[in-house]
Length: 322
Image 1 (cartoon, rainbow, N blue to C red):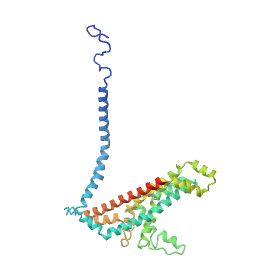
Image 2 (image 1 turned 90 degrees about the vertical axis):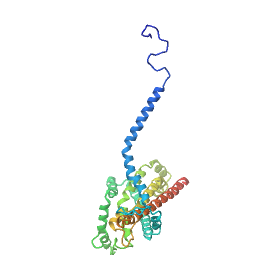
Image 3 (image 1 turned 120 degrees about the horizontal axis):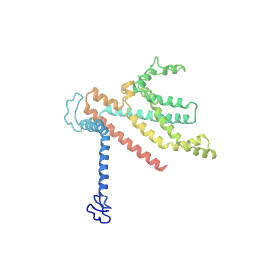
Protein backbone atom coordinates (compact mmCIF):
# COMPACT_ATOMS: atom_id res chain seq x y z
CA UNK A 1 0.00 0.00 0.00
CA UNK A 2 1.36 3.47 -0.89
CA UNK A 3 0.64 6.88 0.54
CA UNK A 4 -0.39 10.00 -1.38
CA UNK A 5 3.27 11.04 -1.95
CA UNK A 6 4.12 7.65 -3.43
CA UNK A 7 5.95 6.32 -0.38
CA UNK A 8 5.16 2.84 0.81
CA UNK A 9 3.29 2.69 4.08
CA UNK A 10 4.75 0.53 6.84
CA UNK A 11 3.61 -3.04 6.74
CA UNK A 12 0.57 -3.71 8.94
CA UNK A 13 -0.41 0.00 9.16
CA UNK A 14 -3.86 1.08 7.92
CA UNK A 15 -4.48 4.71 7.16
CA UNK A 16 -7.64 6.07 8.85
CA UNK A 17 -8.42 2.79 10.68
CA UNK A 18 -8.22 1.56 14.27
CA UNK A 19 -5.06 -0.42 15.03
CA UNK A 20 -5.51 -4.16 14.82
CA UNK A 21 -6.53 -5.72 18.16
CA UNK A 22 -8.17 -2.54 19.50
CA UNK A 23 -11.81 -3.54 20.34
CA UNK A 24 -12.63 -0.71 22.70
CA UNK A 25 -14.93 0.89 20.13
CA UNK A 26 -16.83 -2.41 19.83
CA UNK A 27 -17.23 -2.67 23.60
CA UNK A 28 -18.47 0.90 23.82
CA UNK A 29 -20.92 0.21 21.01
CA UNK A 30 -22.32 -2.81 22.83
CA UNK A 31 -22.72 -0.77 26.00
CA UNK A 32 -24.57 1.92 24.12
CA UNK A 33 -26.90 -0.64 22.58
CA UNK A 34 -27.54 -2.20 25.99
CA UNK A 35 -28.35 1.19 27.46
CA UNK A 36 -30.73 1.85 24.58
CA UNK A 37 -32.39 -1.57 24.98
CA UNK A 38 -32.70 -1.07 28.74
CA UNK A 39 -34.26 2.36 28.28
CA UNK A 40 -36.63 0.98 25.67
CA UNK A 41 -37.62 -1.86 28.03
CA UNK A 42 -38.39 0.57 30.87
CA UNK A 43 -40.46 2.67 28.49
CA UNK A 44 -42.49 -0.39 27.48
CA UNK A 45 -43.02 -1.33 31.15
CA UNK A 46 -43.80 2.23 32.24
CA UNK A 47 -47.60 2.12 31.66
CA UNK A 48 -47.93 -1.04 33.76
CA UNK A 49 -45.58 0.21 36.48
CA UNK A 50 -47.44 3.52 36.71
CA UNK A 51 -50.80 1.77 36.97
CA UNK A 52 -49.38 -0.76 39.45
CA UNK A 53 -48.03 2.03 41.64
CA UNK A 54 -51.15 4.19 41.45
CA UNK A 55 -53.75 1.47 41.97
CA UNK A 56 -51.95 -1.03 44.23
CA UNK A 57 -48.79 0.24 45.88
CA UNK A 58 -50.05 3.71 46.77
CA UNK A 59 -53.50 2.55 48.03
CA UNK A 60 -51.77 -0.08 50.17
CA UNK A 61 -49.44 2.44 51.75
CA UNK A 62 -52.14 5.08 52.13
CA UNK A 63 -54.61 2.57 53.60
CA UNK A 64 -52.04 1.47 56.17
CA UNK A 65 -51.45 5.10 57.16
CA UNK A 66 -55.21 5.68 57.29
CA UNK A 67 -55.56 2.90 59.88
CA UNK A 68 -53.69 5.15 62.32
CA UNK A 69 -56.04 8.09 61.75
CA UNK A 70 -59.67 8.86 62.46
CA UNK A 71 -60.50 9.48 58.80
CA UNK A 72 -64.19 9.35 57.94
CA UNK A 73 -65.86 8.85 54.58
CA UNK A 74 -66.72 12.56 54.56
CA UNK A 75 -62.99 13.37 54.62
CA UNK A 76 -63.07 14.89 58.09
CA UNK A 77 -61.31 14.00 61.34
CA UNK A 78 -58.05 13.00 59.68
CA UNK A 79 -55.90 13.53 62.78
CA UNK A 80 -53.44 10.88 63.91
CA UNK A 81 -54.91 8.58 66.60
CA UNK A 82 -52.05 6.09 66.90
CA UNK A 83 -53.05 2.52 67.71
CA UNK A 84 -56.56 3.40 68.90
CA UNK A 85 -58.23 1.87 65.83
CA UNK A 86 -56.17 -1.30 66.14
CA UNK A 87 -56.90 -1.69 69.84
CA UNK A 88 -60.60 -1.10 69.27
CA UNK A 89 -60.68 -3.64 66.42
CA UNK A 90 -59.01 -6.33 68.52
CA UNK A 91 -61.62 -5.79 71.22
CA UNK A 92 -64.61 -5.58 68.85
CA UNK A 93 -66.85 -8.64 69.22
CA UNK A 94 -68.25 -8.10 65.73
CA UNK A 95 -64.76 -8.39 64.25
CA UNK A 96 -64.20 -11.79 65.84
CA UNK A 97 -67.72 -12.97 64.97
CA UNK A 98 -67.23 -12.02 61.32
CA UNK A 99 -63.79 -13.67 61.33
CA UNK A 100 -65.39 -16.82 62.72
CA UNK A 101 -68.02 -16.74 59.98
CA UNK A 102 -65.26 -16.36 57.39
CA UNK A 103 -63.32 -19.32 58.76
CA UNK A 104 -66.51 -21.40 58.97
CA UNK A 105 -67.36 -20.62 55.35
CA UNK A 106 -63.79 -21.53 54.33
CA UNK A 107 -63.97 -24.89 56.10
CA UNK A 108 -67.39 -25.72 54.67
CA UNK A 109 -66.54 -24.75 51.10
CA UNK A 110 -62.93 -25.85 50.66
CA UNK A 111 -63.42 -29.60 51.14
CA UNK A 112 -66.29 -30.05 48.63
CA UNK A 113 -64.65 -27.70 46.15
CA UNK A 114 -61.60 -29.96 46.13
CA UNK A 115 -63.33 -33.35 46.35
CA UNK A 116 -66.15 -32.60 43.88
CA UNK A 117 -63.68 -31.09 41.39
CA UNK A 118 -61.49 -34.19 41.61
CA UNK A 119 -64.44 -36.56 41.13
CA UNK A 120 -65.73 -34.64 38.13
CA UNK A 121 -62.28 -34.54 36.54
CA UNK A 122 -61.78 -38.29 37.03
CA UNK A 123 -65.18 -39.06 35.50
CA UNK A 124 -64.52 -36.93 32.44
CA UNK A 125 -61.00 -38.32 32.07
CA UNK A 126 -62.30 -41.88 31.91
CA UNK A 127 -63.62 -41.15 28.42
CA UNK A 128 -67.31 -40.44 28.86
CA UNK A 129 -69.19 -39.87 25.57
CA UNK A 130 -69.53 -36.23 24.63
CA UNK A 131 -66.61 -34.99 26.71
CA UNK A 132 -66.85 -31.47 25.29
CA UNK A 133 -70.40 -31.21 26.66
CA UNK A 134 -69.36 -32.38 30.13
CA UNK A 135 -66.44 -29.96 30.23
CA UNK A 136 -68.64 -27.08 29.12
CA UNK A 137 -71.35 -27.97 31.63
CA UNK A 138 -68.95 -28.15 34.57
CA UNK A 139 -67.00 -25.01 33.70
CA UNK A 140 -69.76 -22.75 32.35
CA UNK A 141 -71.13 -21.59 35.76
CA UNK A 142 -67.68 -20.23 36.64
CA UNK A 143 -68.01 -17.75 33.77
CA UNK A 144 -71.23 -16.25 35.14
CA UNK A 145 -71.23 -12.97 37.06
CA UNK A 146 -71.76 -13.17 40.80
CA UNK A 147 -74.95 -11.12 40.51
CA UNK A 148 -76.48 -13.61 38.08
CA UNK A 149 -75.49 -16.61 40.20
CA UNK A 150 -76.73 -15.02 43.43
CA UNK A 151 -80.10 -14.01 42.02
CA UNK A 152 -80.55 -17.42 40.40
CA UNK A 153 -80.00 -19.24 43.70
CA UNK A 154 -82.12 -16.78 45.68
CA UNK A 155 -85.01 -17.88 43.46
CA UNK A 156 -84.00 -21.51 43.85
CA UNK A 157 -84.10 -21.18 47.66
CA UNK A 158 -87.49 -19.44 47.73
CA UNK A 159 -89.48 -21.29 50.47
CA UNK A 160 -92.75 -21.32 48.51
CA UNK A 161 -91.80 -21.33 44.83
CA UNK A 162 -88.16 -22.37 44.77
CA UNK A 163 -87.03 -25.49 42.96
CA UNK A 164 -85.01 -26.76 45.95
CA UNK A 165 -87.97 -27.05 48.32
CA UNK A 166 -90.19 -28.26 45.48
CA UNK A 167 -87.75 -31.10 44.85
CA UNK A 168 -87.64 -31.96 48.56
CA UNK A 169 -91.44 -31.94 48.65
CA UNK A 170 -91.54 -34.75 46.08
CA UNK A 171 -90.03 -36.97 48.78
CA UNK A 172 -92.28 -35.70 51.55
CA UNK A 173 -89.62 -33.44 53.05
CA UNK A 174 -90.57 -29.96 54.18
CA UNK A 175 -87.76 -27.67 53.08
CA UNK A 176 -86.46 -24.96 55.41
CA UNK A 177 -86.40 -21.24 54.82
CA UNK A 178 -82.86 -21.51 53.53
CA UNK A 179 -81.68 -17.92 53.52
CA UNK A 180 -83.81 -16.74 56.45
CA UNK A 181 -82.76 -19.42 58.95
CA UNK A 182 -79.40 -18.89 60.75
CA UNK A 183 -78.84 -22.66 60.85
CA UNK A 184 -79.10 -23.11 57.07
CA UNK A 185 -78.13 -19.75 55.56
CA UNK A 186 -74.39 -20.43 55.51
CA UNK A 187 -74.91 -23.93 54.10
CA UNK A 188 -77.07 -22.45 51.34
CA UNK A 189 -74.35 -19.96 50.41
CA UNK A 190 -71.75 -22.75 50.40
CA UNK A 191 -73.86 -24.86 48.03
CA UNK A 192 -74.17 -21.88 45.72
CA UNK A 193 -70.43 -21.24 45.86
CA UNK A 194 -69.57 -24.88 45.10
CA UNK A 195 -71.91 -24.93 42.08
CA UNK A 196 -70.51 -21.62 40.87
CA UNK A 197 -66.74 -22.08 41.25
CA UNK A 198 -66.04 -25.82 41.14
CA UNK A 199 -65.44 -25.63 37.38
CA UNK A 200 -62.10 -23.84 37.79
CA UNK A 201 -60.70 -26.54 40.08
CA UNK A 202 -62.18 -29.16 37.75
CA UNK A 203 -60.10 -27.81 34.85
CA UNK A 204 -56.92 -27.81 36.93
CA UNK A 205 -57.43 -31.43 37.92
CA UNK A 206 -58.39 -32.48 34.40
CA UNK A 207 -55.22 -30.94 32.97
CA UNK A 208 -53.14 -32.70 35.62
CA UNK A 209 -54.83 -36.05 34.95
CA UNK A 210 -54.08 -35.81 31.24
CA UNK A 211 -50.39 -35.27 32.01
CA UNK A 212 -50.02 -38.53 33.97
CA UNK A 213 -48.00 -40.98 31.83
CA UNK A 214 -50.16 -43.84 30.56
CA UNK A 215 -47.21 -46.18 31.01
CA UNK A 216 -47.71 -46.05 34.79
CA UNK A 217 -51.20 -47.49 34.48
CA UNK A 218 -50.05 -50.10 31.96
CA UNK A 219 -47.32 -51.26 34.32
CA UNK A 220 -49.81 -51.43 37.19
CA UNK A 221 -52.20 -53.49 35.04
CA UNK A 222 -49.42 -55.98 34.33
CA UNK A 223 -48.93 -56.32 38.08
CA UNK A 224 -52.63 -57.09 38.51
CA UNK A 225 -53.68 -53.77 40.04
CA UNK A 226 -57.36 -52.91 39.91
CA UNK A 227 -59.00 -49.55 39.25
CA UNK A 228 -59.10 -48.51 42.92
CA UNK A 229 -55.48 -49.56 43.45
CA UNK A 230 -54.39 -47.50 40.41
CA UNK A 231 -56.32 -44.50 41.66
CA UNK A 232 -54.86 -44.74 45.18
CA UNK A 233 -51.27 -45.57 44.24
CA UNK A 234 -50.83 -43.66 40.95
CA UNK A 235 -53.49 -41.03 40.41
CA UNK A 236 -53.58 -39.43 43.86
CA UNK A 237 -49.77 -39.21 44.30
CA UNK A 238 -49.38 -37.78 40.81
CA UNK A 239 -52.05 -35.18 41.59
CA UNK A 240 -50.46 -34.10 44.89
CA UNK A 241 -48.85 -30.89 43.51
CA UNK A 242 -52.14 -29.91 41.86
CA UNK A 243 -54.03 -30.61 45.08
CA UNK A 244 -51.70 -28.34 47.03
CA UNK A 245 -52.21 -25.61 44.44
CA UNK A 246 -56.00 -26.02 44.49
CA UNK A 247 -56.09 -25.96 48.28
CA UNK A 248 -54.01 -22.80 48.53
CA UNK A 249 -56.04 -20.99 45.88
CA UNK A 250 -59.33 -22.17 47.37
CA UNK A 251 -58.49 -21.20 50.95
CA UNK A 252 -57.39 -17.72 49.88
CA UNK A 253 -60.49 -17.27 47.72
CA UNK A 254 -62.83 -18.47 50.48
CA UNK A 255 -61.26 -16.19 53.06
CA UNK A 256 -62.03 -13.25 50.76
CA UNK A 257 -65.70 -14.17 50.26
CA UNK A 258 -67.96 -11.16 49.80
CA UNK A 259 -70.03 -11.01 46.60
CA UNK A 260 -72.46 -13.89 46.96
CA UNK A 261 -73.09 -13.29 50.66
CA UNK A 262 -73.64 -9.57 50.14
CA UNK A 263 -76.16 -10.26 47.38
CA UNK A 264 -77.91 -13.31 48.85
CA UNK A 265 -78.17 -12.65 52.59
CA UNK A 266 -76.59 -9.25 53.24
CA UNK A 267 -74.76 -10.92 56.12
CA UNK A 268 -77.97 -12.04 57.81
CA UNK A 269 -79.98 -13.39 59.35
CA UNK A 270 -78.72 -11.84 62.55
CA UNK A 271 -75.16 -11.59 61.25
CA UNK A 272 -74.85 -15.39 60.96
CA UNK A 273 -73.34 -15.20 57.46
CA UNK A 274 -71.52 -11.87 57.69
CA UNK A 275 -67.84 -12.35 56.69
CA UNK A 276 -65.11 -9.98 57.76
CA UNK A 277 -64.97 -8.19 54.38
CA UNK A 278 -68.67 -7.40 54.62
CA UNK A 279 -68.18 -6.03 58.12
CA UNK A 280 -65.31 -3.88 56.85
CA UNK A 281 -67.61 -2.60 54.12
CA UNK A 282 -70.34 -1.80 56.64
CA UNK A 283 -67.96 0.01 58.98
CA UNK A 284 -66.32 2.03 56.22
CA UNK A 285 -69.20 2.84 53.88
CA UNK A 286 -72.21 2.65 56.19
CA UNK A 287 -70.62 3.80 59.42
CA UNK A 288 -68.33 6.27 57.58
CA UNK A 289 -65.31 5.17 59.69
CA UNK A 290 -62.65 4.61 57.02
CA UNK A 291 -59.77 4.73 59.50
CA UNK A 292 -61.30 2.02 61.66
CA UNK A 293 -62.25 -0.06 58.61
CA UNK A 294 -58.63 0.17 57.39
CA UNK A 295 -57.36 -1.15 60.72
CA UNK A 296 -59.71 -4.15 60.54
CA UNK A 297 -58.71 -4.84 56.93
CA UNK A 298 -55.00 -4.87 57.78
CA UNK A 299 -55.56 -7.15 60.76
CA UNK A 300 -57.33 -9.52 58.37
CA UNK A 301 -54.54 -9.08 55.81
CA UNK A 302 -51.88 -10.09 58.35
CA UNK A 303 -53.95 -13.11 59.40
CA UNK A 304 -54.13 -14.26 55.77
CA UNK A 305 -50.37 -13.86 55.42
CA UNK A 306 -49.79 -15.94 58.57
CA UNK A 307 -52.21 -18.66 57.43
CA UNK A 308 -50.57 -18.79 53.99
CA UNK A 309 -47.07 -19.09 55.43
CA UNK A 310 -48.06 -21.80 57.91
CA UNK A 311 -49.87 -23.78 55.24
CA UNK A 312 -47.00 -23.53 52.76
CA UNK A 313 -44.50 -24.65 55.40
CA UNK A 314 -46.65 -27.68 56.29
CA UNK A 315 -47.18 -28.53 52.63
CA UNK A 316 -43.47 -28.23 51.82
CA UNK A 317 -42.52 -30.49 54.72
CA UNK A 318 -45.01 -33.11 53.59
CA UNK A 319 -43.66 -32.99 50.04
CA UNK A 320 -40.09 -33.44 51.31
CA UNK A 321 -41.11 -36.45 53.40
CA UNK A 322 -42.93 -37.93 50.41
